[in-house]
Length: 251
Image (cartoon, rainbow, N blue to C red; front, side, top):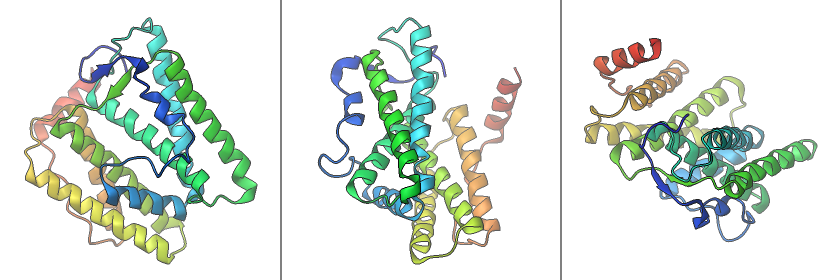
C-alpha cells in the first residue's frame, strides 16, 4: 500500500470516524451492516469457531499498524491516500470484523474457553490500541467509493474468506448442526455473488478486481472438490486482464 493514487474518498480525520471502533463494544446493538444476512452469517461463524474468528483482531491490528507507518513516512499529510480502491475496501472490512468480534465477545455471542480468554482479551486490546493510534495520529477517514466495483470488491472479499473458512471446517472440523447452517449460508452468499456479477458488466474493472475474482474462483473450486456441488460456477475472468496483471507484476 502506498499514497500514490487518488482512488479513495478522503475526509479530515477529526470527523470521529475512527472513534466508532474504540467506543465501548456493548453500547447499542451489533455494528451496523447494510446486509442483515451477511451479519447473521458472520455471527454464526463466530459462534462455531470463536478462536479462529478472533484472528479478526490481529488482522485489524496488522493492517492498522502498516498504514500508520506508511502515513507517518509520508509526512502525516491529511490528503494521504491508498494505492487502490481494493486497499480501501480491505481496510474497511478488516476493521469492521474487528469491531464485530469485539461486540460479540462482550455481548455473549462469542464463547471463548477460559484457557484462551486471556489471549483473546490481549488481542482485542491490541486491536483497539491500533485504532486509537490511527485516530490520535491524525490518520484520515478512508471510505470506499460508492461505485459498482467497490461494492463488488467488498462482497467478493467477504465471500472469498467465508469460502476458505467453510473449506477448512469441512476438512478439519467435526460436523455439527451449526456448521451445517454456516455452510448453507456460505453457499447461498456465493450464489448471490455470482448472480450479482452476472447482472452487471464488470469487464472494465481494475487489475486488483481481476486478481480478486481469481482468488474467489479458487475457493469455489476447493469447495467443489470437497463435495459441495451447490456452489456456483467460477466467475469469468478476462484473459487480457489476467495477462496485463501478470506483466505488471513481472515489472
